[in-house]
Length: 146
Image (cartoon, rainbow, N blue to C red; front, side, top):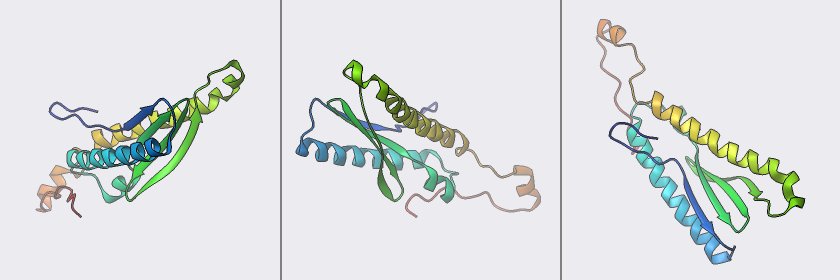
């Protein structure tokens, strides 16, 4: 996702040839921390996001080891294991391709949702004319620390 001046990452991924315990957990930790940084950066670019919007935001993390993949989701306040699938490496596994398509479609949907949040939460949704007539102040921007 990008604006004229800012580029925002919406996903982290790690790839390894084979699955080992150390690589699995270190890559998962690294990706989770990177996604938390992406989330913080994203929140700075959407000043008019509501608390409800923020709770609905989901940042995908994909971890691929060998021919297997897992998609995790970073959302406030947790990391959830959403979906796992395998890439087919023989003709016998082609019937399982539907699960692969579902997993990749889920990631695409999450990124599309983030793009929609990015587009809609950058401008003040309140009616400027009503605000002037009521002599009320402009809505303050999102307090990230809160």
